Image (cartoon, rainbow, N blue to C red; front, top):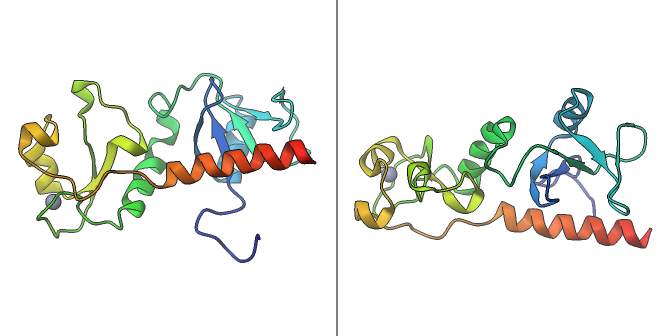
Length: 168
Ligand SMILES: [Zn+2]
């Protein structure tokens, strides 16, 4: 099952927020840094106990101050890169074939939109500027498809981890 290098690396650790909702995958190195710096704790996937020891397997960490994706500034850069990758660096607005270099909040932040997989799409700079602080409807723009993907994958991985952990 774990052969070769998968796109969503096996070495990656699932990070959950303070409500135990998976936020995203982080590299092992990043997870270790966050634990060592005291921003995150290692979580036992069977008991959900937090511990600070880095011996056992590092599969799950908790950011006790983060909620969903929105407050985790720490993870923002990575989230944007993953959104671009998910959307193949192509602008997600209908009729546009340009390369995406930015990410757009579908529901803008100023209108309460979240910084989450479901609300971010890859977008070229001209479309992003043209859309401004408006929703696609308000700006008369149509999305090629609804954003989803890695986050759905993340929830699947999270469930697998819990299943494996409780079976062990
Ligand atoms: Zn565009």
